[in-house]
Image (cartoon, rainbow, N blue to C red):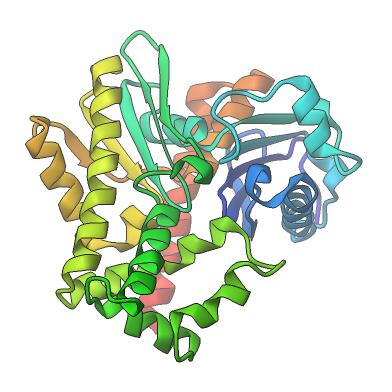
Length: 334
């Protein structure tokens, strides 16, 4: 297969996993892929580097290309809340990739670009971690949240998973009764929550892994569990407060929500909208982004290389629509 003269990779790098998208200079998507998390604040620089570049090599290999053929690698990382400087970019790339061909910014920044296409808007992320960003009508950018797990990552999967596990542990010692305890014990085939301690404090467990427990809280809440419902409501209210902060900064009235928690928890979404109403922000228009964050990373790459922005975006949107239609056809054929 003939390799395009210009190959761009856009990356949405979360704490648990990453999504990658490969395009040529026109914005035509050539391939997509996935990899492990790249939040080096949580898993360390060496592991984050390996997760990303192993995934990038696999993606390029699907097109008979090599990492050295990549013209620009554009990374949105959950470890950042602003563009990375030269020193950090070089440290992240190590010996795997030329840092001058790597563009690094926050995952919120590339998600915001994908959602708003440069127009005024607010982007809220609730995945493994949480963060928000906004752009106003003059093009000024604002950020909020993104404090990381040491300060709580309020509203995130980590926050929900940690609170759910804590509630289960407290229930075991006479605290408020909750289905969470039984659900955790069933999931791990244990007789007590305390038996989880060797796993939680073992060498292979990272703080970000607590986000994987968030669906347990969602399951309990769907069954009417009061403790789990309060956990989700509290987390959703935190995201609503972040939204209010970014609205005050930007005045933008279109809110784009993204991340595993928003994507998979009906209770969280309902509680978020209710919290916005209570804050007097029920007039805001809330929706998921039309383009995925990795597409925003590709748009940033196109801008860096001076490619025609309108034509690139148009081709990118067409390619994504084709991909989605193919995926729907396969799903319907099952």
